[in-house]
View 1 (cartoon, helix red, strand yellow):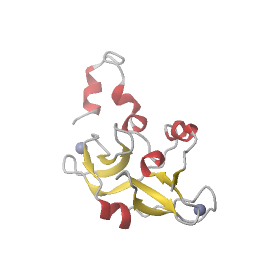
View 2 (cartoon, helix red, strand yellow):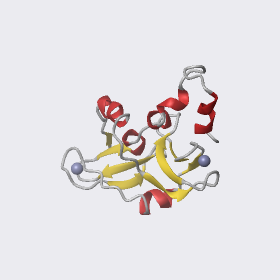
View 3 (cartoon, helix red, strand yellow):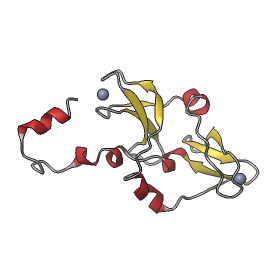
Length: 135
Ligand SMILES: [Zn+2]
Ligand SMILES: [Zn+2]
């Protein structure tokens, strides 16, 4: 089975594309919905609190049964099946075409969703700014 590599421009598009994928859970920290994001270490996917970014693991059963995405195969346009890939990361597989796409390739990074969280200190200077990041 061969990995289908997405165009790197897809990642760039995520930074301005406003649709998010729900993690199907409520965060313990803020009791807010979680969102799926690509973790720092490549193919790993976490679900992060939509308010503060605290992450938790995405269980396999949730990925397979609850996330419920339609991922269209880039070759045949059929629906790809959620599976655990040989490298233990989550992905979507098209058996007839013998290809897969990593779930993490379809997701933004946390920094993509909240670009201001990583801004350099002093980029904004009023005390009011701290109230935006209560966690
Ligand atoms: Zn939180
Ligand atoms: Zn296919």
